[in-house]
Image (cartoon, rainbow, N blue to C red; front, side, top):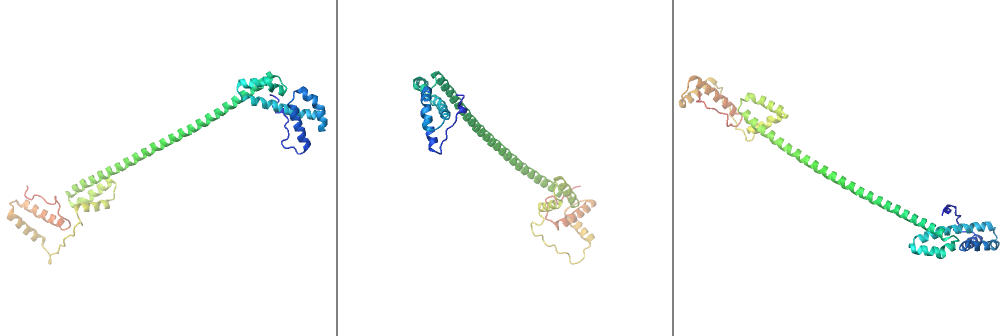
Length: 285
């Protein structure tokens, strides 16, 4: 079988009748035992008008082709079958010993096995590649799913934290606003500025929220008509003291404090709605 690469191929489509005749005669003679075709070689060469050596080359080439093809054909059969054919005609037709043909058949069988193994290995590689690709895709999908769930949880936590922070800030504002209302008006602006700095907010916005908290502007303010004539505050305070003294017994300094506090509260009430903590107990000492 080592002469496979040395086979001289016949032309597939000869251009002239002589070439076709040479090919046909070489194929016929190659089927005969060597002694038989060698005995006919001289007459055949003359009839074809070619040299004996040239015809012999074509016969040898055809013979080698047949020697190569026959083992491949037999290699596809069961062992009992091919061994029978080797010993009953195949080797004789090829002009070789049965043992030689048997070796060629076994070599062809090994080649078929190797080819089948290569195909199987190739198929295994393809299956493994497909499984690896599927596993990779599954892992990628799993990673995407986990990442999406993680991002969703993070986003939900962020929204929850923002709601909690907003609720905390709103609660802190309400408490601070309530505390500010208990302080003198002069301290309101300072306390609002401190709250704005603590919360990181604009003091003007907090001032508006505080005004809403107080209810300023939520209802139409009553129009206070000024007194038509100038008022002597000393006289007003004295009249106020006289009115208080009709109902409450107190010392002079207590009466003065009540007069001044009443005037202060009245000035606030003229600018805003009454508050729960805007008054006081004038009778306490």
